[in-house]
Amino acid sequence: MYEIYIAAQFEAAHRLVGDFGPATRTHGHTYRLEVIVRGASLKDDETLYDIGKLRPAVDELAASLHYRDLTEVPGLAEVNTTAEAVARHCWENLAPALRGSGLDSLIVRIWESPEVYAAREDSLT
Image 1 (cartoon, rainbow, N blue to C red):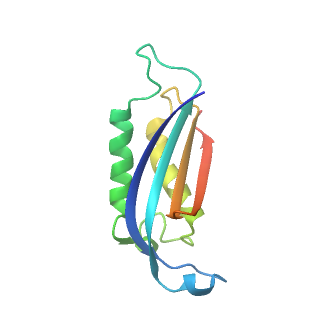
Image 2: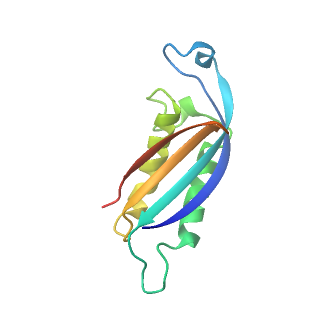
């Protein structure tokens, strides 16, 4: 299995709904977005996927969340903006363009701090 990894960073605010203690107040994170695509075989040019296409897609996604209140972002405004929900949102934004390109899976990790992340992994086939 081969994989490609791309990372980006964004600053965003949010607040959680429910029994989350002080996290129910508006607060911010320096989020780290990590994207990993995996596939079993390389193309004829010895690449898994064109990093020159993946990097701009990841950067554009991070830019769309940068300096935003996540509770106001379309696709996140309707949900509790947990790290898991943000990971799902990012996965769902990236996956459509990657399907049909010979990749097996996509993993998206959202780090809220250097010690804490949530991830979504799913097949692209």
